[in-house]
Image (cartoon, rainbow, N blue to C red):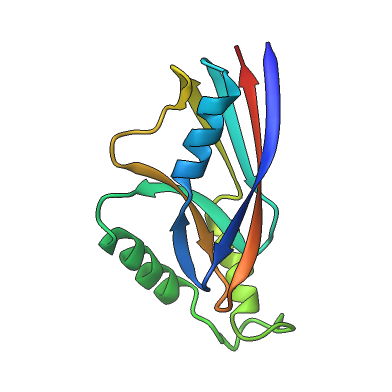
Length: 139
């Protein structure tokens, strides 16, 4: 059994979903591990990780429209506004999505479906540089 780890840096322009599948797939391929388990973990409380459709960009826009309706910025019920009206909504968005993903590795690649991509979902309005820890174990 072998293992390796790295950290991906994902720059965001503000609230959106960033597909960083290519970087993940390249890293797994270069690792030489053919069968195993990949774990990804975003190291922030106001961003999350998703596996989502990568063919139609309208999917990402629909996700954002849904989240905006579910968890609107500036809701007067929310009191944690230290960093602005999107601060607490970003934390809630992160809590209702995922901060870690486990993806099987088969044949030296993440076992993603045909239309699946790995996304960092930025929940803050301003640009950020997000860190995603990656760990791969297998043979």
